[in-house]
Length: 285
Image (cartoon, rainbow, N blue to C red):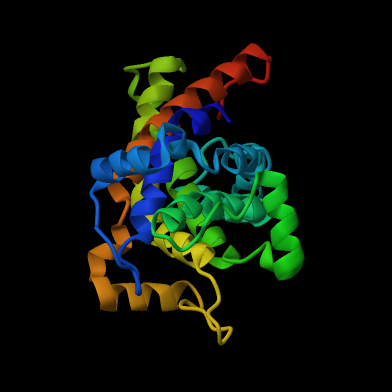
């Protein structure tokens, strides 16, 4: 929750970048810093924090499960007494716990994307006011108008993204930490945690950006008058995006994604490791 609060404006800007340029988009295309400046000018400085409540709430079930669950799930793939789990076991554990955690947290993610997209729709004249008054009002409204199933809209790309993020994040952090410790250059301390987190943030961004683009676009889309949708799934979204905008469109938001995941990883792993040590649990192994 601490990491999400610190880096949220970057994530918000990244989502807006991923939504611009899609089929039917009309308006000025902005770079990362131009987009952030435009949001602040048109929606106010606090507009950069739109949808922050569901973003923070999401990490209670999401990160709470994936981070703790990783150490247990990893044992299932490599055995309880194996002190040196293989890379394949780490990758399988990271993807599994990430996918399960996201399947629980999808409604929070959906509300976050919807609330992040409202300011853009208001600025474009497509909405008179935000669709939702807050996190719980959004959950209630979506449940009433779209049903329980609607609360898991975009769950496939969201789960795929989470699996890829955790494949990159947890596997890399785990591997990098063991490598730094084995090198003898650092001990199991804050310096080691920070160095490992830097490696983790880059790989996680590289693995997850295409799925993140699909997730943002699918969750944000609304049904047309004939009850059809622009994207029917992750692959369909990728194909239409590449055809209309080129292959590099799948990496829209990569820079802000990395810009966010880097600091996010630094704040998260350092606070998580220190809290584990302070509470007597011991460092992440």
